[in-house]
Amino acid sequence: MDHTIVHFEIPADDPERAARFYRELFGWTVQKWGGAGESGGSQAGGPPEYWLVSTVPTDEKGMPTRAGVNGGLMRKQHPGHTTVHYISVENVEQYARKAESLGGDVEVPKTPVPGMGWFVWLKDPEGNVFGVWQQDETAG
Image 1: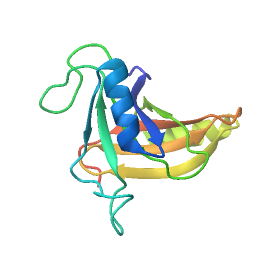
Image 2: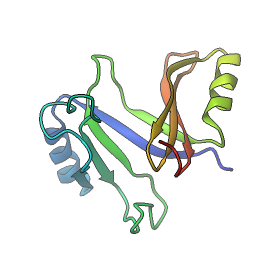
Image 3: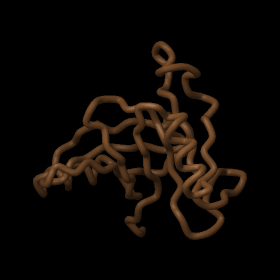
């Protein structure tokens, strides 16, 4: 397996303003995802607001049809929230343990994205946060 960046997330204080910026600057397609809260934040107990960002065309499953990485845009979750890149791995728990053994930290433990996969946020020894992603359509 190639351990390559497969997704990115851009945090924003005003997601609609950020979506407009990236649409106009690069011509990206940015669309609010149907399952997310509709105003100002997440629904009570529901998922956070989320916009899908397509930098390259996708097929009916949302997968890129040519080389490129697509991602998402979301409302900032905390003041230090920075852009996060997700790297594809075989098993997020295995890579979390490996990162810790190399001096990294787990910032967000194994979390499902129902019907898509699992992620873990890690912090490298320099303080950079990134995600590892495990594709798994049975996640939930």
